[in-house]
Image 1 (cartoon, one colour):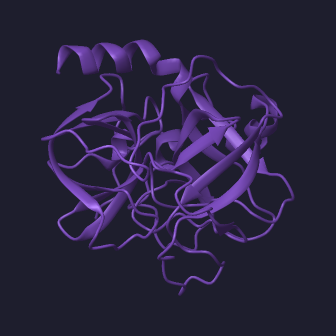
Image 2: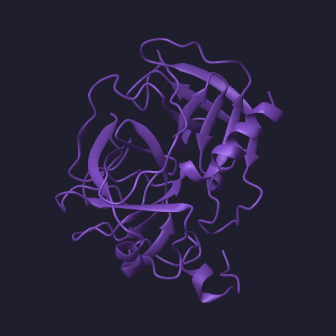
Length: 260
């Protein structure tokens, strides 16, 4: 794939045109498995709103169920259709509920190849059947600030070994929201008010370049979706960038209402 002639800031954000995966830099978090390194297996059933989006049989991204018929994820995961799997902490589970989705609504200001307005709604053909293992999560009523304790969850690589395979179980890591000033030390030209950054609490466990759309839950509130990470995934871990959900409440509600 040829590298397009783009400004330096945009060149930092192209995951597929920047050469080898070992090159340090900021990459949209797609296709390689969220690397929750040194995390733990999430308590079984503790994330009933988390879903896996499949393109045919290939795991593409994660997302969250915000309505019985609507999944929230990130825009750079856009595909023409998905199979939405829910109701299981296992990445592959024949007993999980699976529903086809053929309609996606990308934020109108999303810029492909960057993290700008990296948010998208996916409408399933049929409503999900709610149960103890399948449930919706509310959109946040407010934005959480610096120092807030959060948990990021996802399926994926759990070690810094590039040859490691994705975890079959949902993994969790504890992180804290950090200030824009702290995050800009790693991502100076990129951070904006509709983005959010976290860093590991103990410096040892964090997500890294990985599957997009994994949720950030802060004090019981959905605050972010994994948008980009810094690679290589080695100590000391760099902050992770999320789409800041609280900034999109109006667009989300209006989009679901207009297309229900």
